[in-house]
Length: 130
Image (tube, rainbow, N blue to C red; front, side):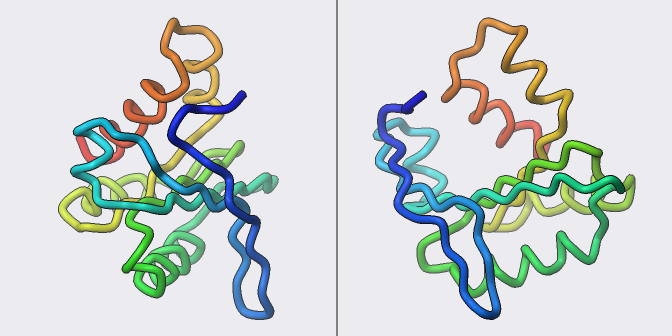
């Protein structure tokens, strides 16, 4: 389903970088305006093992490279994140750049609760640093 204000612009793949989904953010709500992120990046990790700190550190560097336009990177990991990753991501809440970890449990929340998609995405951002 389309989300008013979000526009899929491309899926980027280069020799040295792959971004699964690039979304242009045109949402005109104070929450999104204050995040100052005209572009939102998405990554999916459908691995048999937990997503570890090496993956997250790579994404942090990618956010630095794209800092003029992207401040948020959503990472979906169906097989969870290591405990070290979870605690490190909470500390990232003090940074201008946010990596938002999404697990199967979060997707179940979207499917089972009465949140609309944009409210669910805002909830994910909020829980990533609280």
